[in-house]
Length: 171
Image (cartoon, rainbow, N blue to C red; front, top):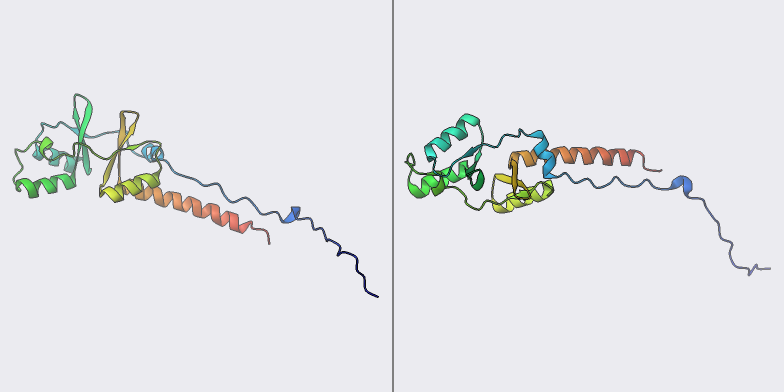
């Protein structure tokens, strides 16, 4: 004799097997890079000589100088700009003014932009230094080295969260 009644459902309690929530997505902001850097913003005037700019870059051990006129940023000068200026104007730039080789409209970022954004914009624009603004106020300059260091720190942190998450994965 065959039983033609509908199959019985088996109810299992999965409350003890509920998966852990994945770690929240963490995005590091440029503002966080600035907290690890000095507040100093090294600058030069557009009328200063390229020779004095190079001397300042070397003595400070930095790769860029903000070009200020009456306290306002009017450009950015990097080591690369000096090299390109030497090619365009000849190697003797002793008497040339900073204004002749500086970048007058540098790519900038906001302090609340992500480090990923900074890395992408610096890579796509082929720039090594990025002025950081908050509204119209210059907060500082970050280098590609600063971005790389922050990206590694962020990756290590995410890695530790994922390892912790996997370690507590229900079996």
